[in-house]
Every structure is written in structure tokens, then in C-alpha cells.
Image (cartoon, rainbow, N blue to C red; front, side, top):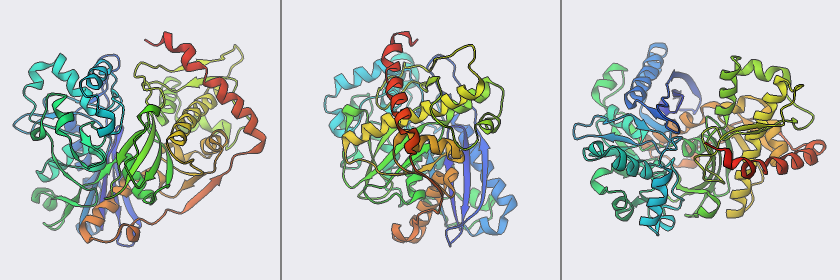
Length: 485
């Protein structure tokens, strides 16, 4: 048996996977977000640990015999979050998350300090990344910055609490702006630009390597053996790629999770910062990947659900599994700013085209289409950086909706495939990395492709209307930019 833990933004998922590769059981615990000031997004690091332990407790309570057989554990996590630890290994403040936009000025400062940033890190300086967050802390909370002994990412903090070891994998480390992504090692130059050095960083391993052993207290708590290995693991999107068997150059998928991502595997370090495309290490040795990132995907639909005090399923039900054409309303899904292609933490969401006769269904459809249009922006950015993507698998919470899948196919102009276990892709990928670390098997033996549940082809009847709607939608961001707070 193998266990995958995905430390997400809205919750922690745990998945138990058999030797045959089948999902035996899942469990989840919710997490709360804090927004103490405009553009701020924070979480309590200890809440991640409590949620992870609680999720495994739930699995152990329901499946004690299977949990007792676990040989390897893999970790997946939300990327970029700055978890600042003092000499005692305890957090000095709440973690500053990936969707926090406070450090825009520090991004400008970092790029000026380090002109070779793009070539080394492979990415633009964006507020979501970890390094600008530390510059912000240095400038606004200097007493805390002076006490920083280690900086960990979310899943690395959970690993530390479960094993006692401070270790990070290459894919997650690539999202800090401190990694030499091509060489797969920390960059002393980039660290120095933020007032840090190598001593502030955890040890690095590949995602499929052993990073540590599970601490005896947790092995005993869950009835496991004392030699359970914990793999390096992966950032959430790289872990999803492992779950989808996106492990060969050219493999691609679309994630509609809290954030949205178009992900493509590459066999080399291929930075494209001019398009605000991310270039990161993959979770397996010798592989990298490119990503276009939307900061609010399924989160946009969740926001609408909250505002309308209506469950998401009830919002979607009246629309069925398909619509004839675009909504007359346009929606910009920039509720938390945007990365690709705008790199604008201050960008804000908007509805345009509302009328007195506008109804709820048109607004819901506009949100789905706004996210799909943003995904098309990402697809175009990736296409300009490398070869075109011809089809994508769909993962994340948004993958539950056949309607959204069809809208994405119509807007992107390529086939979109809903796949089995698409909602637990990151946790499944983490479990597979746990297996690779425990057994030493070849990735191709373990990372089998999930069964496709349904395929959605672009409809010729809708293509022209969606092309026109997309080009109209693209005019909104520059027209409304001056109204962003």
C-alpha cells in the first residue's frame, strides 16, 4: 500500500493506493484562509499538519489493515507559500500563500538587484513566488526577518512535522525563485539578492527519491511499520502530472482547481518569461515543465456560489451539459490578480454586459466561460513558447462538470478529456512518488494513464461565436485596468 497527501489551499486530501495501483480509500479535511488586508492571503502552517494527520487518522479508522501495510508516502502541496521558521523550528508568522499579491514592489526590486534572475530561475518575479515575499517581510517585518532560520514551502513543513527532516523536492523548489532550475540546485546568487543564504534552505531531493522516514510516533499511531519512507514529492501540478502519467515531453493537461493551469512536459529547461510562462523542474529526474497559470479558476465559481448563497451543483444544474453559444455577459476571473499572461497582482474581476433582463444562468455561464477564455490566453502563451498543444486531459474540482469541459473544448479549439480520478490527481501522483521511492521501480511501470471517462470535441456550430466572444473578452483587461484597486 502507498499513501498520498495533498496539502492544498482549501483542504488536505489523503489517498490510499494499492499495489495494483487502484485507489482503496480517500479522506479529506478542510482548511481556512485568512485575508487580513487587501491582496493578503495567509494560512496557519500548523493547520496543514493537523489536517494531514486528521485525514490519515480517518483512513486508519476506516481501513486499519490497509493503512498498516503502507510502505511509502508521497507529499504534494500548494506551491510558493513562505513558511518562516525560527531556530526552534516553529513558525514565526502565518504562511504567506501563492495567491498573496502584496509583494509587487518587491518583485521590481528583485529584478533590479538580479538581472540574471530570468536566466537562472526561468521565471519573471511575481508576487506569488516565495522570494519576493521574503523581501516584503524584510522591509515590513524586520524583527521577524532577523529571526528566520529556515524557509519551507507548505508540504515541506508538513514533512518536517511528520519526519523531523527539512527537505524539499525540485518541482516545488523551482517555484521559489531561489532555484537554479536548469542545474536543479539552490542558487547562492538568487538567495543573496533576498538577504538569505544556503543555510536558510532545506536539503533538495528529486520527487521520486527517499527524503526521510516517517517518525516512529506516527508509524505507531497509524499501525505502520517503522521503516515507511517519505518521498520527495512534488508541487501540486507536477504531482497531478504524475497522477495523469504526464511524464513524456509534450504531454499536457488542464487543471481547474482553486487556481487553473495548463501544463506541458519538456525534456529540457525551456524558460519563456516574456510570455509570463513558468518553467519549472518536473517531479522526475531529467524532466522539466512549462505552465500557464490562472490564479482563480474553480475559485471563481466557488466565489459566485458563496455570493449567491447557492451550492455550486444547484448553480450548474439548470444549464445542463451543454449550451448553444456564449453568454451575452463577459466575466474577468481575476479575483486574485493574474499571472499568465498579464503578471498583474492588482488585476481585478468584473462582469460586463449586464442588463435588466440578465438572469442567474447567464451569469453562471459567464463565469465558466471567463475561466475558459483565461485558459485560452494560457494556451496561446504556451504555444508561443514552444510547440502547440493538440489536446488536454482535465483535472481538478472543475473536471466534475461536463458542461465546463465542453465549454473549454469549444473555447480552446482542441479536444478535452475528463479522466478517472481527476479530482484526486495530485494526491494520486503523490502516492505514486511514494511508491517509486519505496520500490525503486521505473516511472513508466507505475505511472499508468487513467481511463478517459468522456471526450469533448470542439463543436463547429459554436466555434465562430466563441472565437468572436474571446476576442471581445480580450479587450476588457486593458480597458478596465485603470479601475483596478
